[in-house]
Image 1 (spheres, rainbow, N blue to C red):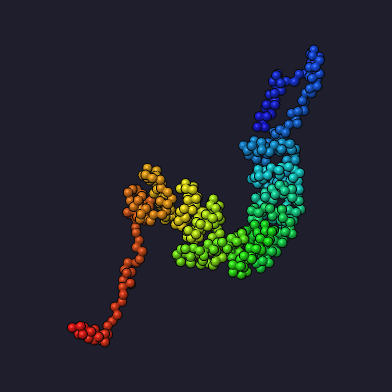
Image 2: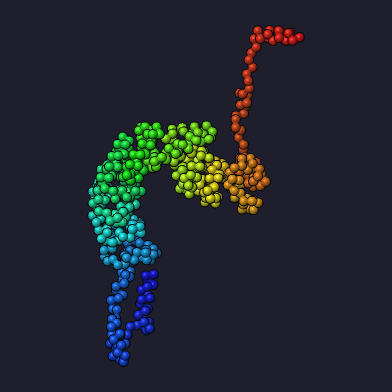
Length: 463
């Protein structure tokens, strides 16, 4: 677009119809009004130089020089025309500052793409001295994404350079390791906008609430960096009060938080609702026993994880709780297994996620033994035109193995190998060892002489 505008501007001056008359020839005109009008027109000797595109070639060459992909340059400059008004020399200074922070071409390109304002020298000049105030060598331990997030937040919100460094130094003084610091800056970069006092207050609150030390705080922060965002600590206090009302003392809460720091993501009242769901389950006792085998707190946390998983895929909160209540076996499956089943349902089987509300049993059956073999059979029959009516999710999941075999596999011998268990050549293992039935035969008690005399006397009385 920029190149096209420059080309159209140049052609307009070469076109005789649009060319401005030479002021030196105005005495040939006999119309005094026209002479006056023409004489007032000034030839635009400097007009082209005042265009925003005057630095197009220089800026493009400069970005190419430092490794910016040539194919991406037109779109990038089209979206960021303001860069063409900048002095190329200052742009190069900004690029050198970025490379001093992280000498990587990949970092430079990603930084410029995510935040083009870093090419403005006035916005980035405060970082010319690097990331000071941290331990020696810590700058090199910060990842590219961490440094990119620091600069992006700093430039976007025009943060004071000293305040940003103060926040980073406060984290280091609290005993945060480099791994945890990278995790915090990569996932929660707004911590750099917090003052050192607020960061220290969040640290003191968590330490006092659970009675933990710096090492334990570092572990919690590494798994759940969002804990520093609890600057509004009233909600956090209400959450701890709810845990106590539910009967969990400080030691239980501390133990669970250290094992699963994302428990702190609970909203107030959420754990209570999860436990109410578990208490109202109508399922076999063995399933309920497996759900509660690590305690009520852990069981409620597992429900929370699966509710979040279902909601992330498009179900409402009400539908997510309904699915878990109808099919409690979902709680026993790992979240990754639930994710895999949902992706297979939507991406491969091409069913809508709302089908889970009607057929929650899909999430409660085994993927390799139940879902995958049946889908292979149905998909094969669909490809060869062997299905009269469309098979719904209910028709695929609900029937027993034998019924499904008789309906879709037995009439088509080529499908037997796909189905597995009822294939003709498949080995069917016995559920019990051979001869085990003998152990269940009742034992014959030996008869004494007294028993024999009693039996004879009884028989004689009958005669």
